[in-house]
Length: 283
Image (cartoon, rainbow, N blue to C red; front, side):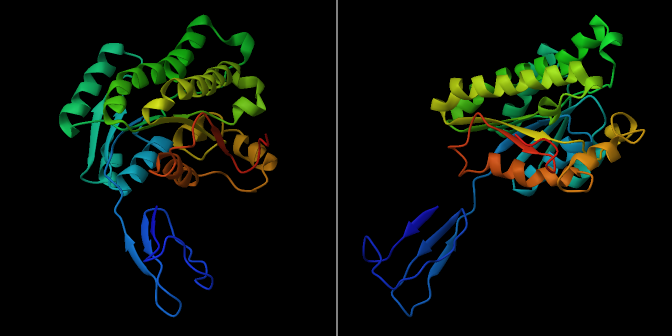
């Protein structure tokens, strides 16, 4: 925010307090005169959202497109509905985030199409509820590949372009299970705890480059996938009973937090995990 104080370096007594929002240019005039507000349009950025075909990923893609950013959605599933909702600045790509060659090819295409890359939202993930004793090595490896190796590959492909821009926002979607430890989600919880550690260490590695790295931690959210897995059989009811806010979380409940961590004015916020779960995990 730029504040222009008129003729003097400091306004004299009696000027009063003017409430302004980020992105405003404000001129404070003398007592009795109306302050002049000039609104600055934030720059358009290029964002990639993984797992954008549905659920939280779709909400994140729509949110960033609504801010005027160019958004590229990466998913192995059809993104027709996301594209319809996100608008003309949305580019859907079929990408398996566990495939290094596919990730690099998609990264090259994003930069070729839009001329750069600034925002990464590592949202793609899987969370099969499996008892620990029934978890096979293949189950474990798949969950780790999608939930932890995927963000590693996508971020590594993006980082040279964020550094070249001198500005970046990396957002990792974790989960409140990291703080709650549900017994039927041992592998999933371990993968998301790893992503929290990844967030903290990477923030220290890239902070000097104008890049922030933060994590958003949702609770059990009402999505198609959750409805047939962790939310089924009374799962939504059990989680809702633990929350301070007694309703089921919706994808839209995460939108304002995403806007906050990606904001031009959030350059001093990094290495943090923002828990947005209605108060089920107080930490």
